Each structure stands twice: as structure tokens, then as C-alpha cells.
Image (cartoon, rainbow, N blue to C red; front, side, top):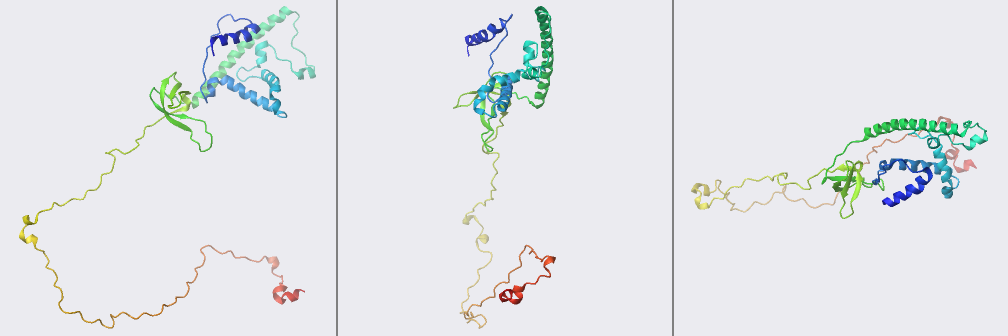
Length: 316
């Protein structure tokens, strides 16, 4: 948006309707960050109220929601604003709007000035009182809103070159909530930062969407690796360097028998193969879970089952 565009909007929509201002308004262009509605809270709050009003008015015919815009705007202008404490119509015109219900019940009007001059003087005095009340009430509400926001706000101070996590909107229940890490490329203000998201383009975000990234080692260093147990090695000594008494075995070898072995006794002989014995089947163990005992209701105790006593012929 260029300066010529802003000047044209001010001239066509404000100067031609309300006259030129006495001094410069000090209008400064600001940019809003993504996924941070607090940066443009006045517009975002009005959009939410407008959508709720349109949903109520266009409930029967949603396709004609654009025809309900004038009525939604009139309802907003005649409703008490929480910040100012009065209706926008009263703050602009110095009197309340005449509603259709006023005409239906023929309510008296508040305009009883004897002349136009007195009416203008009373209107000016009323506007001054209304604007003073609006400033006082708005200041109190702004301080209350600031205190409420500061209770949940934790200051995060990041510097250029820090690595941070970026909060992203969740597309599903198991989708990640944080993306990154990214490097802070530039610190625009105390709360606005520019992130380097290569190969994507840079993004400007608010500090509420950032979280410090803690570096973690990706692998163990040589000092952190566990040392392997080393078994002591015995140095080998040449045979010629050993003493003579150590070279001979300490225990003489066992002499081998020269006589043949005796024949095996009958007890040591292998028994002949017999037919395999068939073992009885194992007895099934009772179930581990208890068995429900079914009892007949008391009203069936005197009931005689003829089918079991006389058979099917007894029933015919």
C-alpha cells in the first residue's frame, strides 16, 4: 500500500463527509504477523462479532447473508460497547438511535429544544460529556485487559543467531505442533523477529510463537563411550629360556592298559527292545475360572415336567 492510496481513502471517505482535520492524525502503517490476531485486535474482534450477528440473522436463508449486512451493522452501532460503555451511535451523534420498537410503542423523543441554536449548544455539551466518559471508561478497560494479558505472558528475549522452534497450526490431532529449528535472522522489535527458513522464504513472527531450542548431542564422544574390559595378557617366554625343571610336566602321564578288557557282565548288557508302553491320557485339570451355579427360581419348584416323566406320548 502506497501513500497515494492512503491519501485517496482519507479524502474520499473522511474529508468529504466530516471535513478536514485540524492537525495531522499521526497515521502510521503497521503490519500484522500471521496467526497472531492480537496484533490487529480491534478488527479481529469486530469480525468475530459480525460473523456471530450474521449467523443469527441469516439462519433461515444463509445464501442471502450479504443482504443482512446493513442490519448487522445497525445492530452493532446500537449495542453498548464493552470498552467505551456506550453505543457507537451515541458516541458519534450525541443521542441514541430511534429504533423500530420506539415507533411501535410511540415512545417520546428526547429532542425538546425550543430553537436550533439551543439544540446545537446542548448537542455540543452532550458530545463533550460523552467523549470524556468514553476516554475514562476506555482507559480503565484497557488497563484491565493489559493486566489480564500480562498474567499469562512470559517474556522471551531472543537474539540474532539463536535457534528456535516455531509454533504452527495443527492440521490433525497427531500432527506436530512445532516446526524447525530455525535461525533468527533479524530482530525487528522486542517482540517481532524474522526467521531464516531455507530453502523456504523468510517469515516474520511474534515472540508468542517461538520457543528456545536446546542443543543436544547427536552421538557419544570418545570420553562418553564405555571402556571395554581388557584381559591381562601373559608374555610368552621362549622354551630355551625356561628352567629345566619347568619344562618337564609336573604330573606324569597315566599309563595305558596293555591287557584286553573283560567281557561285560549281564547287568551291564543292553536290554532288548520292547514294544512302547501306552500311557493313560492326562486327567484334565479343573478350569481356573469359577463355574457359575445355575439355580432354578423358587416359583418353578412345584412345576412338573411331563415330557421327561411320560415322554412325548404323554403330552398328546
